[in-house]
Every structure is written in C-alpha cells, then in structure tokens.
Length: 218
Image (tube, rainbow, N blue to C red):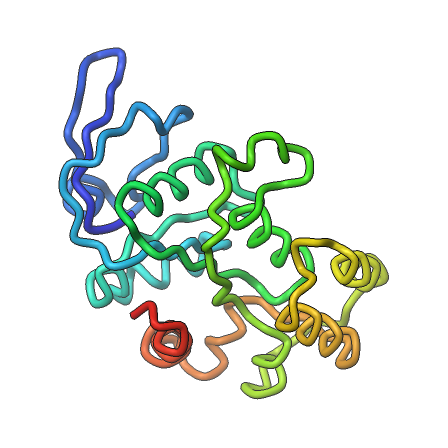
C-alpha cells in the first residue's frame, strides 16, 4: 500500500502497521473484514488502484508511491469485496481521491466499474462497497492510437462486451461512449505493460504524472 499507519484488530490482539515501512515487497495484505482496521496517521495524497500485479510491482520498484505520496492498492483482477470496501473507506474517511489504473479492454473497464459503481451481482451492497467518485486513468483506446502501443486484436467476446457496455448505465457518458466506439473502430486492445514499449520508466515518469495532472489529482 503506501504512506499510511493503521491499527488492525486480530485474534492475537491489535497491531500497528505502517504500510510502507513494516511490510515487505508484497505489501500489506487486506484482511477479509477491513472494518477491523483503524486509520491512525495518513500522509497520502490519493489512492491508486492497479489491476495487475506486474504493474503494481513496477510502480513500487520505481518509487512512485514515495514520489507522489500515494497508496497503491492491487486489485488483482476483478477486485474482492474487502478491497473495494477498504478503498471506499480510504476515500470517505480520509478524503482521498481514488483513481483506477487498468488495461485497455472491456473486461478491465468493468473492473473500474465495480470499484466506482459496484458489480451487478452485488448491487445491493453498492452503498457499502462502491466509490462513485473514483476516476479512470487506465489505458484508453485513444492512448493506443496516440502512443502507438503494442496491441492484440479484439476477440468476438471483446466486441460483444464492448457493445453491451454501450447499453450499460455505468458507461453511458460522453467519455465512455467515445472511447468504446473508438475501440470498436480500431478493433484493438492493449495492456498496461504495453507502455514499457516507450521505456521501463515511461509509466511512472510520463504517463501517470500527465494523466493525474490532467485530472487535478497529483
């Protein structure tokens, strides 16, 4: 995670953990019930939720959490309820902006959607789990074109998923309609790691700083 001191209740008693200094490379493991956590001290400026473990490792290795005072949360694909609950608490209780960094494909857009608006299967828990203010900083179809990123062709299931997202209330905004229609037009998708085609440090030195600055986050 990042610049955050917390107290966690365990069967063996309470323990205080600094999410940078007191954990190894694997980071702090979010407990099944994140409501057992008490936030003690916080120096973070925002929360960066990252889809893939490879990108999470790259950010930490490059010191992005230190340089930008952010809490890095690994989503691990479709995020667990505990991850979404803790993300919501970090936003609501510590007043931290939340941004979601994913691959550029329809399934990754749904990962963002589950963080921001909740999943369809657990819609009844959205008030408890969702962070509607979360912003998307993931790979956009326009990034694929602008940065000439390495790509894979869209599969039939990708196309069907994108077309269904055009009908999904969570994605019925000008931004998402424009991006999804562009992706259907170029018939390509791309991963976070594709940014490394511009250098291993491109994501931490250029891509994320520019995107976060555009959004007024960092």
